[in-house]
Image (cartoon, rainbow, N blue to C red; front, side, top):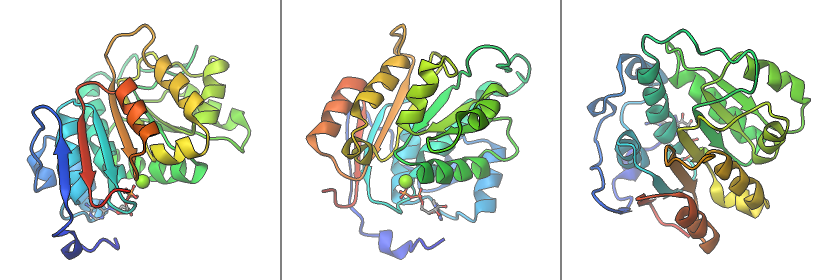
Length: 249
Ligand code: ADP
Ligand code: MG
């Protein structure tokens, strides 16, 4: 949809890190599972974009990732598809004991992004990619009454897509617990820092590691790579792959 694949031919891709999993040339080279493969086909995606070719095998291998790529390069699917595949595999045959009727909602995957609009966009994409699976997604953002979001959270959630401010509010009210977060994604990290969300982001990441366990896989996406982002990566990623797709400011 609007993606010109010919223009991708000469996009420079650079990766740094230890034993970087090699890129794929097709969605079907990875073990995404038949449900996701069908969903990808129904989205009309013929080939992965450059960031998808490189980032998806890295995430599928369980590695932390710092990725810089321009808008419109297909980053959402690059992180959502491996996360959904991972959760879906873990859920196969375990439809029971997943309710969260009492206590705080406890997602396995958390996607943090700067605005309500982005939360909605990512939500729409996750719904398409998770079609036919048992993976449940919920959203949390400011500017609307909190009770609307509490209801879907209390029904149980695997993937939570949220803005930093509203998420901190939910944590403080003990409505969300980040203890079970295995996949943490920060999307448009540079924009979130520009908006002054660094304290909230640091608090959120620390909540995912209480008690510290190294059980978390962290993916950091950003269009630019200023020193604040480098610090965040150094503080919260471990043995990560650094990927740049195209020219990065
Ligand atoms: P970014 O986050 O990098 O700015 P998005 O993830 O929002 O980009 O993707 C931009 C658009 O490209 C979306 O409409 C998405 O559905 C579409 N898209 C993503 N991957 C592919 C693909 N492999 N083939 C065709 N279209 C794709
Ligand atoms: Mg995006």
